[in-house]
Length: 355
Ligand code: NAD
Ligand code: TYD
Image (cartoon, rainbow, N blue to C red; front, side):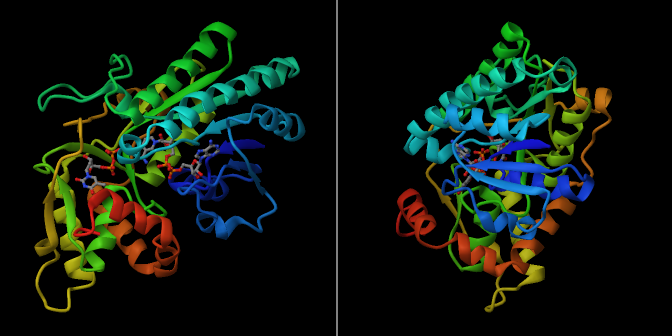
């Protein structure tokens, strides 16, 4: 069986669904259920005998140690993290606690377990750390996309904390020989994404008739990857990646934010026209820029393609159309995540006028 941390979140829950669609092997989810962890994302598997859930913190070394001893996973996939840049600017503490200190305790618990495994199991064991392209910092418009050898230059509390965790993971390989794999992926989008991130936020604000907040001039560029493609990449790296190696994962699809927002508006114009017949784009609102906003990220995903044969299957057009449809077809899920705590985040961050 495998242990997956943070599998009640956006990417982790998509990973669970992808895992059970492709494999018979049991999967145990260790999740602290922060505001971003949502059991509803996993409602479809909760009665599946191959699925198990433990409510806990990756930073609780004793509990993780016990879990490992008891369940004896052949691999650990670490998705657990604080993941939102804007929240990291408002309150960096949780990012340092979970992303850095939590990963450290997790690594120590895993190292202890791994060292005591019989030879064959020890050799086959893998620790896969899921990270982000944001650790590389910002690119100028003409610069080549990030390769795995790009120097780390994180700029936000979020990316700095993820960079620190990547360094710890790498050091545990170099120093102790722990068979680690790291994936650095670009911006994900798709089903079950908490609507504090750009794409689901814009879809839901549009439907509610609220302003669509675009930071600064809206010309910041991100490389977008449909979440199911990311999950396939993580499975492929787990299966065939070389221990100690890093794999950059991306969609080969760079877009300025303004294009992303406009494209969502057009999809909604077609699928759920506004009652007054005017386009959703009339709701677009430029708002003050994020402090230290990285101008551009871009991923060079040739290594994972060359070595492991992975390529994205969705284009941005096909993935975004699926995503918009998913949010339209899941009003109960939306209702569940946009209550209390979410509303106070939106009001606190964007101000009363935009919320
Ligand atoms: P998310 O915020 O939706 O989910 C994070 C999950 O981790 C939640 O279920 C939360 O409850 C859990 N968690 C948080 N702290 C924990 C702790 N201390 N112990 C156990 N569980 C804890 O995040 P996501 O968007 O699904 O991202 C998952 C991973 O992928 C993160 O490591 C993130 O850095 C990385 N990543 C995300 C993106 C993206 O675009 N979302 C892109 C590249 C990499
Ligand atoms: P986000 O989804 O928060 O991901 P990240 O910051 O990790 O890239 O934001 C994606 C881009 O969209 C980023 O450049 C910030 C921008 N953005 C807005 O313009 N308005 C918003 O309300 C949000 C949440 C993000």
